[in-house]
Amino acid sequence: MICPLCHQPTTWEANPWRPFCSERCQLTDLGAWAAEHYRISGPPLTTEMIIPESSGRDEHQGEGHARS
Image (tube, rainbow, N blue to C red):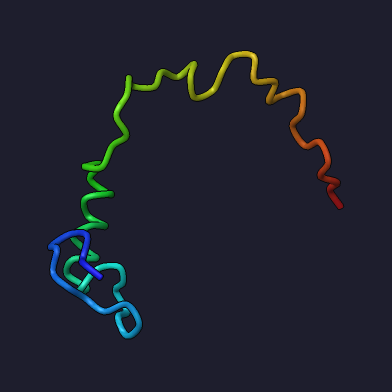
């Protein structure tokens, strides 16, 4: 298996950082996610795309969940 970050060969079975070759590569990748370096291409989302005005959240709030 090849490390997705540094492209060095690594083992799968005995590797606690898989699919990365080392803790360093694993933490570097985590830092890239936290810093939002990985993105899905496309137009940016607007608030309406995330939570539509007609979402009906108030109508269904608490439905199916009985409180004791």
